[in-house]
Image (cartoon, rainbow, N blue to C red; front, side, top):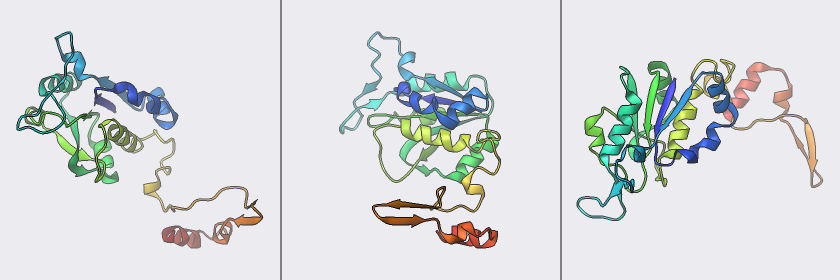
Length: 211
């Protein structure tokens, strides 16, 4: 799968994608990540990308044409591309959506906005899906783009290295423990719950469902 990320600040995402599972997935050719900066599609030397909103209001709005050109470059001649338009009022993203994207698409374009948003006419030119990662507002779309990239990537065969690795596919708990079995901190002993040491798989699963 190839993730095409439209962003004014692509460098802000580089540290995350160069580490851990995502970095390994890129190295193993399980996924590809490409960036497209709308500023690169502006001809004037000042590279001015935003303007005041029609109807008044604070802040600035990203112009449609540079974003449209960036999306068009990302899509190229590909026939089946999912274009995600990030904004606070979109459909809330979850694991079901992540699985659907991983199953149905080889190319995903993620449009990360900034300032007061992107001119709505982008969504008139392209068939997009408006997505939100939660009921709150962030400074920009780069963090949501990384969240979607991560959540979708882990649904791709081989990215996690083990088909049983995704927590959502097995009985898991919000509370996890590892060695040592007992440790002392400020004169108090902290122990692993006995059920986890029992070897009784049914009881362990029931405990995990409760925690």
